[in-house]
Length: 270
Image (cartoon, rainbow, N blue to C red; front, top):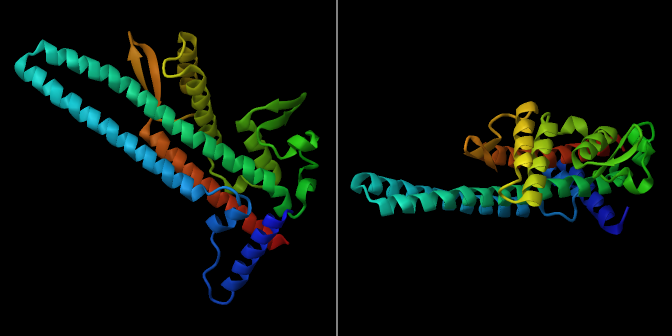
């Protein structure tokens, strides 16, 4: 354990001792700092919410402009106004895509960073450290990959997959009971969409669109997590819905609280 980690652990222990003297007990969110000493998750979440709110306000303003222009075109029969509305519609389709990319671009990396940094610090806060993983299939990974959630062990060897890595490591370390029950579909949908948007942009190749449409249909993701624009009846652009954005934010909060509950449980064992 590094000097910084030791200081953090001593601070948490002092806070817990103080709780016995009538000072409010340390909460899960504070306890999570033991695993995330270098990540100011509250400041990041505040900045993310500000960004999302500004983008939502911009979308609402554009929608009002389109409604006003549509009403004017209907009232006057102006072809020029109709053409202007068509241009605004094209702008809105791609602005929504830009804002959806911005959302997944701040949510997915934060969640990935939370898990990665927490697992890297976890051996120093486990009662049995790496020994706990010895009897788990993950224990077959090399030491460098053992606590790296970007990798997981499957019969045949090491594979790279952030979703499977997080879930496997959570199970092996004993963190799983403290995490949201729907973590798998949330991570699966969030990172699948992140990968598509950042590799393919707003308008994906036809085969990528059809594959993602099928994945939404065949997966256990809620049907209202993604919205889509269509062209000629076929999927054109996919968006994170407001419901899925809020669900992702809630999941991040639940993961942080779960990490704190895990730390407190481990401290009670020592």
